[in-house]
Image (tube, rainbow, N blue to C red; front, side, top):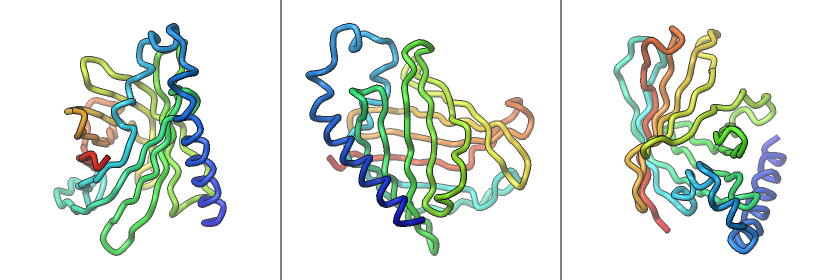
Length: 190
């Protein structure tokens, strides 16, 4: 399974490199004017990531684990999608993940899927869906915590050319209350 994941990652990187070379010349004025299409352009490149993660989700827990990682993002499909290769150096249990994002020009929203190297043969979860408004990206979906389906939210904020902030939160009550369980601050390496 790890070999399959590695092959998938290698293919994505190769496609990303080719897409990156072709993306600007192939983009016409109509595509460049599509609202929301360039929302994740800031993320293209190499990043250092500082993570803070709750030790237990939805357990009234206030203990955080802090650790480092990296994130490498490449555009695909002329900017209509992009992919992250993320290294998560969780103490005692490092792993990798792949975030795939795809833009729907009809709804002007992004969908985000996650592939985790710890469970490479599991089906992908339904995507987180949303977009950016006034510089903040908000994406909603569902996750499973302790066997229960919960509402999930991603937020992107404080975005500059050299930094950004991402956080994940869960809601056990369909969005009435939220518990932030993972925070990631990124700093551009190149």
